[in-house]
Length: 177
Image: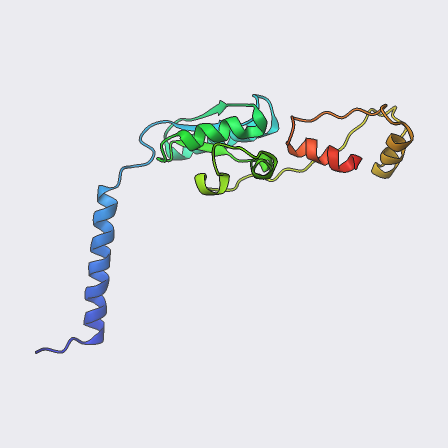
């Protein structure tokens, strides 16, 4: 019985592994072979929509297939998330995940999906920051002045948000507590 030298054994092992990998690659379908949907849980013109359209354009150029942004606003992104969860898990329906997706897991008791179990992270590509703005004629010029003014004048300060459970809504609620 012939003794294999270590180098020969390692070469044969590497060849066998490479052969298995190459055969899998050869059988794999080229992705994407058709257009991809990028679902956004906010209306057209929102910050998430704008970011999604920039990303979709770049992905379309890179992948050689159209990446179509589809807006499904409502229920603090739950409608969009449900569309993706109910789609085939083939990589052709993607979700633009934003902070409300994480918030919704605690905010809504009866979701028809489990965000952690039913959604898989593919890539991260955006980081958002928030700014508080007022009319220049407003008497407060700093956040602490604004809070003092709001406490001294209950019911006179309004706030806008993207909807219940969104980051802007929760930031405002946190500010008022």
